[in-house]
Length: 147
Image (cartoon, rainbow, N blue to C red):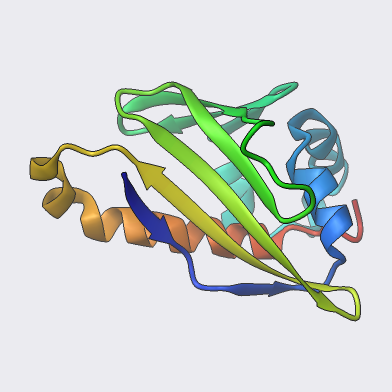
């Protein structure tokens, strides 16, 4: 499995609130819809490609729709949320790693784990690193405290 991690991001919200929002897609969707006017335009553009379901996220991608399901066995409350591909051409996990920084702040690192054939790694390495960074940046921009 190849792992691509984002740069660490600081979020001005406590770890438990962030974990509870990101590990419950439908609850989070209701809050996002209610606070759309507080989200940056780039985040809104990306959210149009995402469907949040009970225990899953469906993402439109160049490879078609990817459906990721919360993998409760791999999650670690409140530090790690793992979404596993239920519908994808390659084995794929999307992880959100959280660390409590104290004073109501949390550090987040987004992680993409893919089971890529060796010949594809060189072709998509740069794009996947960029995707992990953009995912990490988007997570840091969400208005958790307002939700």
